[in-house]
Image 1 (tube, rainbow, N blue to C red):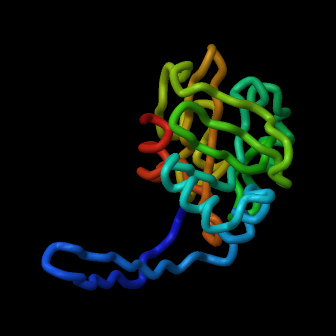
Image 2: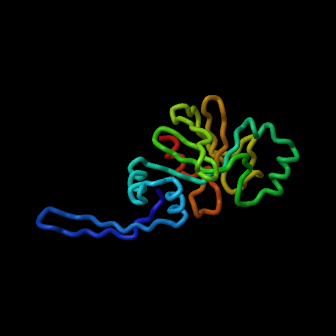
Amino acid sequence: MFMAIKSISYKSYGKNLVKENASVSVDKNILNIVDIFRGETPRMKFINDSLKRGLGLFEAVWIFKSELLELSLHKKVMARVGRSSIRPLHKHSGFVEITQESIEFYNKKLDTLIMRVEKKSISKITIGYDKLFKREFYPYSPPLRFVFNGKTVYLFLRLPGEKKFKGDDKLFIGLISD
C-alpha cells in the first residue's frame, strides 16, 4: 500500500531485546479502497497481508491498440481538443492491481475482474508516444505500453489522491517488470 511512516521509536528491554513501534499515516482515499477490497478481513490484517504480498493498486485508464486503430478521425480530433487535462485518451477505466505474478484489471467498482495478464506473458514494455498514441492525446506523460499475447495496451496509472495519470512512473514500471 502507499503509506508514509511518520515516526519510528525504539525501546530497550534488557541488554539485547529491542521493541520497534511504528506510527503510520494512511491517506483517506487509500483506506476507502482497502475497505472495498478487504471484505470481512480486519483492516490492519488486510493492510499487513497486502504489504507482505507486495500489493500495488492503482486507478487506471487504458486502451488497446486495436481499439485505437478503430477510432474514427472525428473521435481522435475530439480527443485532442476536447479531452480533459486530467484523463488521457482511453476506452476503459477502473483499477489495476499489480501482484507478483500478474496484472489484474478491475472495473470502477472493484467488484469485477475484467482481465488478468500474467507477467510471464508480457513480451515488451516501453514508454513513449508512437504513431498511434500521439502527444496530443495526453501531453503530460507518455503512455506505458506493453505487449502480451500479441495484444498491445496503452496504460496510464495514478495513485489515489493524485490528479494526473502517468505512464512513465518508475514505481509502476518496477512493479510490472518484476
